[in-house]
Image (cartoon, rainbow, N blue to C red; front, side, top):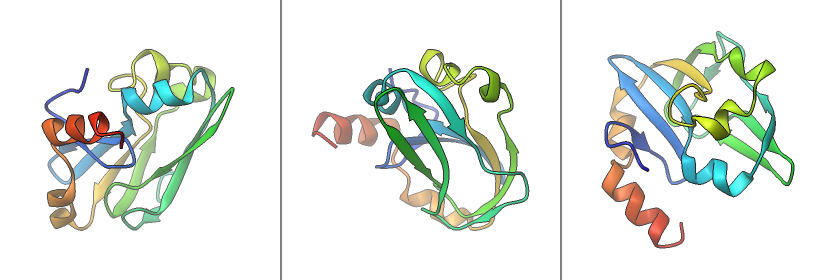
Length: 127
């Protein structure tokens, strides 16, 4: 299931745009590829990032997935619930399994994100 209201990167991150803020997570496709998530390393609030900077990592029993910033800006909050329950990323990747929120500094970067149909086609093509 690919939620239509979200935007996506080709690195399998999703973005929920909320004015000048964005909530970020990894897609259902990404969490399925990783398998059972056992640890999530999240960025600290206040960290300033550029688009595509590595800002978080998601560890599973079989791999570590690096998470890049889908947009430039400042991290506002990390999802504290993941420290005790990293499996929320598996159970609800587009909801309670979100990773962090950020204030967007360069709104024009959002135009490069994929909509749900384009992301679905990208995944179907083996991306």
